[in-house]
Image (cartoon, rainbow, N blue to C red; front, side, top):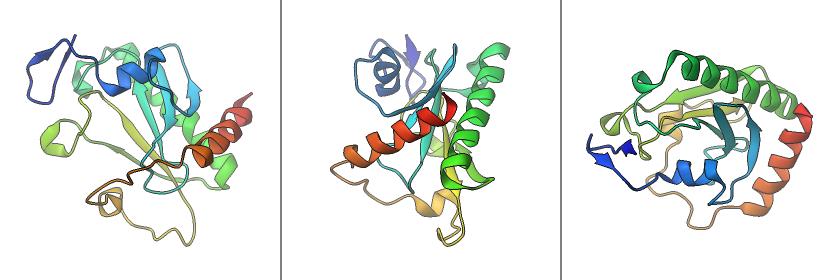
Amino acid sequence: MNKGNDGMASCMPTVFELIVRGDIPSHKVAEGKLWYAFLDIAPRREGHTLVVPKRATSRLCELTTDEHAALMKGVCEVQARLGQVFDTNDFTVCLHDGPLAGQEVPHVHFHVLPRTHGDGGKSLMAMWPAQPAADPPHDRLAALAKQLTDVGA
């Protein structure tokens, strides 16, 4: 059971819980015992990856110390993979912690975006469109996910 963005307990799993369980397909980038990383289907730029704890909770402060550490290790693992594929050491890393902060899925998740020369250099907030694309580019996401998973193999 998780708490939704309204703070009320919910028996419905979040979309990220369904992804972690494999009930909804994803474009996996990397995985650890306590975390899972996959490409965003509405990317703000190529390589936009989400890193989520496997245990669903809507707030960062609700994670255990081990989950915090594992999640940050996951962010670093994703940065290493993205860095190799996009030839960069620079990233935008963002967390929306709660609905008033812009969290759309009530499950803790970090956005990790590789930053490169000429990508516009905007903050993550400035990259958020009013409406995401209606049809995610699954072919391109699958090819990039394979390239990223192969980097760590």
